[in-house]
Image (spheres, rainbow, N blue to C red):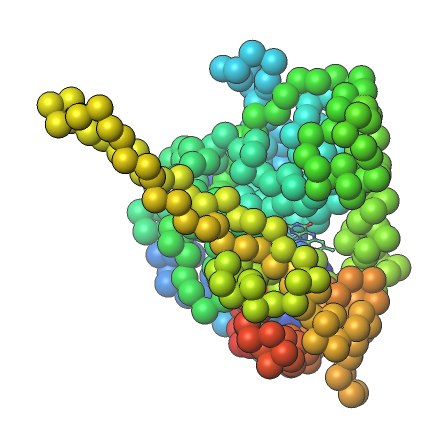
Length: 378
Ligand SMILES: Cc1cc2nc3c(=O)[nH]c(=O)nc-3n(C[C@H](O)[C@H](O)[C@H](O)COP(=O)(O)OP(=O)(O)OC[C@H]3O[C@@H](n4cnc5c(N)ncnc54)[C@H](O)[C@@H]3O)c2cc1C
């Protein structure tokens, strides 16, 4: 088993917190990863599967278990059953940003708006990563998954992963266990072969972020460069020189609320409709059909509201910190909690609780954390 000398998790997470684990394993091949997982599950000790550590808030107490670092890498090109498309099967430990750079250089479209998101490819479906209206659910074909209960490896189509807004059946949401515990070994994306020419930009959210009108035509590389510039201005591209990036990205999720609750919020609070689930298909037996199909019951769709707006309008400005704390809101982005230098996980959790409390007393809803919390509570 490829054991390595353990190092504190604070050195492996972008929020820079986390204690020393008992044991650390680095898996550089899929076989090593499968063996390490099966033996850790058989062992029964606490286990943390670690990618790039960019979506984790880990407590500073020693971690009484095994950390398996997913260090596999590699991209395999496969034909797609859809004309004009190509599949990429990517190892779980491959760097996401390197994958986006590769796809853009090869003229393959579908993930360019997600340039600059840190972390590994294997963790990307776990919370259905997304930015500027593009999400991995739009291009994900399937994953190879090892099931925690059976230890078996199988190919799971994307539509069985419950991919939704920053969620999937695999995610350890705060306060709950995943619906389908398992670890992704490879990810297969289906990308469109568009080449390097200029083409219209799909998606209003992306066009708005890039300052483009509906008629504009640009190349994939142009989109990637401008997304990276936009993200850097918000401290959303990892940069060792910029403490605003010592974060887990957005710490709180945009809240999904009922239309009636949304009406209680100030009209200036940005909001977006959430597509309602499709109605189930109504089947009328031919013998019972009387020439009339009843209209489907219409219901208002839920509403996604801006967590950043709620935070700023509860009186907490960018850069806010509690007295004597080494944790603060990013000076560039109200949704990012940042470590300003050796902040403990407790200091970050204290700031998160303070923000939740302010937003709740001002607007009546509790913001939910987006990162996975290990050994620390809000
Ligand atoms: C500056 C910054 C900007 C960010 N911007 C965005 C953004 O725009 N959009 C967005 O969606 N996210 C964003 N994030 C969050 C983060 O980058 C993503 O969630 C990313 O996919 C996490 O990958 P990781 O490898 O670092 O996962 P980790 O933090 O290592 O792990 C996260 C969770 O996934 C589990 N996990 C890891 N690998 C696997 C695997 N192979 N199989 C199953 N489970 C696994 C872990 O056990 C853990 O529970 C940002 C983070 C930072 C720091």
